[in-house]
Figure 1 (spheres, rainbow, N blue to C red):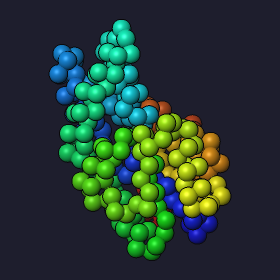
Figure 2: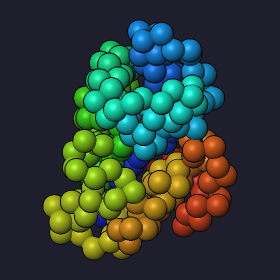
Figure 3: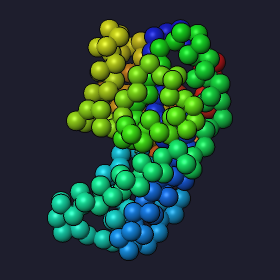
Figure 4: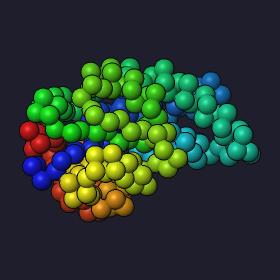
Length: 217
Ligand SMILES: O=C(O)COP(=O)(O)O
């Protein structure tokens, strides 16, 4: 572990099981516009690439083809409204996350969060689980023009702390996270319990699969 000067964590599916509240948010949205409900299992396959992608997947599943970008943007605005309201209301922290993040914080290690979730929802759910103060940096899906797997977030952290790629470890749960790290030349470990677009995480070829975060303490 001493090899790394900065540990960066993904959020959904890595630190928190948020599928419940994301399902609630999409179902509030679909209920408002008269569409059928989505299940928790479907949500688990669609989280990880940000809210616009999630909404696209849900509409595709329901066989809804919107005519214009404007219609999509209007629905996305409704989704964000419900998503914000639901953030932190129906999620669970995964085992070992609180202990490990508190330990890293107390030992003075640099720790950052890099997620594709929008910043307002990210802050709300972190606060609900009393995790927000444990990160030196919180980078969300709307912090930069590009989302993961673009390496912009990891490049930002490298520049900010004047670190080389070898000094950073990214910990996530999906092929998107593996690709993000690869695009920045950063090592990547994954947990097998999260969301990976319905695919086996081994196929993404991370540097290491860890059963949970306890190996970091
Ligand atoms: O897709 C999202 O909204 C967030 O997913 P992530 O925390 O795994 O990046």
